[in-house]
Image 1 (cartoon, rainbow, N blue to C red):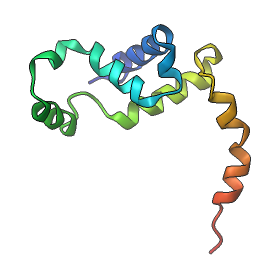
Image 2 (image 1 turned 90 degrees about the vertical axis):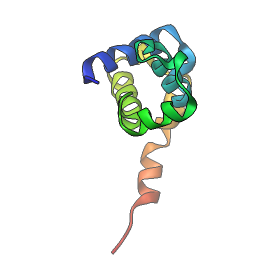
Image 3 (image 1 turned 30 degrees about the horizontal axis):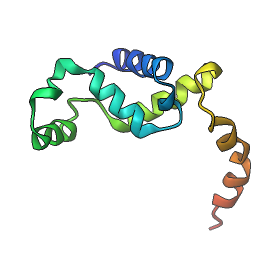
Length: 100
């Protein structure tokens, strides 16, 4: 799956389904559901999981990374939790520092 169509699908989901802005599970559900050309309505759960494992639906990690990149550039697509998460960013970075 090409990056750009996936990016467009993620952006569309963020615009059309505001709940996807703060919920990666909702985003993944929406993107996979909207990729109906893959025949999701006509396959078994095992078949879906095999296709997911084989990367036929793209990378889940790439979907969430793409969401973060879009929200960084387009503040109007940020969710209600975006500011809350970023407010504590520096504090969390300090807490995660390891000394060797």
